[in-house]
Image 1 (cartoon, one colour):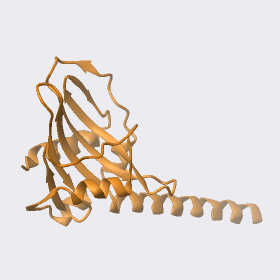
Image 2 (tube, helix red, strand yellow; image 1 turned 90 degrees about the horizontal axis):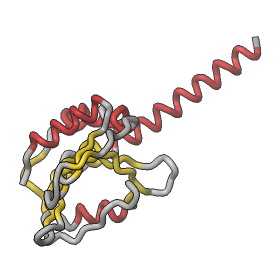
Image 3 (cartoon, rainbow, N blue to C red; image 1 turned 60 degrees about the vertical axis):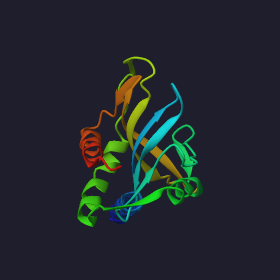
Length: 172
């Protein structure tokens, strides 16, 4: 009987830890739509959506820190946002909550094999940045899709929903 209680306690503890991890990721995600091209002059533009639904746009004049190996520090992510322009657009919290619930399943999706589509087309992509669970204060970039010179997409169905949402926003 004691073993049953211990097993039940461990099971409850594991479930509650997972819920806390999910809760962190669901309340502190940043969505991004971005275009970058180095051919025929540097071009970089797009927008970032904060967990509060605020939208910040950026263009080639905005100093930018790109993620390294799909990681970016919290300070650099927030620096990028601080140097961007706050748009008049505000995403409804109900929408943010809905799309944040898709982030964890999308983060488990692998990427399709990259397929060459051409040259000098640049890269247009949708990503979400989720906090790392290793207490480093960094964020992991989850690529939802990329098109341009190379095309690839996240294989999770939820990533397709997130990509469609970000693409349809068309914020400038």
